[in-house]
Image (cartoon, rainbow, N blue to C red; front, top):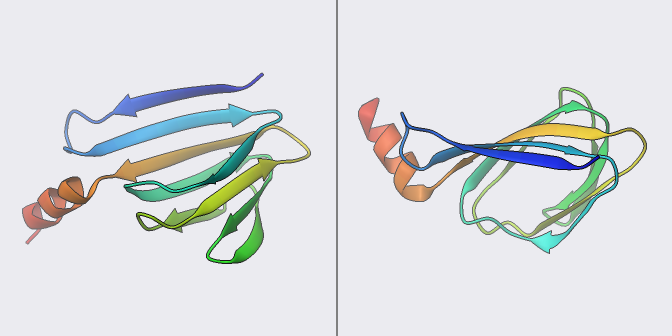
Length: 99
């Protein structure tokens, strides 16, 4: 079963969280407008980014800058991950609040 759930922060403007679980899924080459920080909770996926290919496993953290081309394919067990997305205005506002 494939499922996703997107939650938008009410505390940090421009921050959202994607919870995803894929049995068989392929993300074609794409990019995000946001900074992405993803953590694999279980399963595995092959991720292509920055001209390299690597395997994301339990506990691995993946970070991509806005406009970094990337692709991913699940294999083996169900791939479950959480990904935070932070927009540029959100980053600027959050960063300023800490200065």
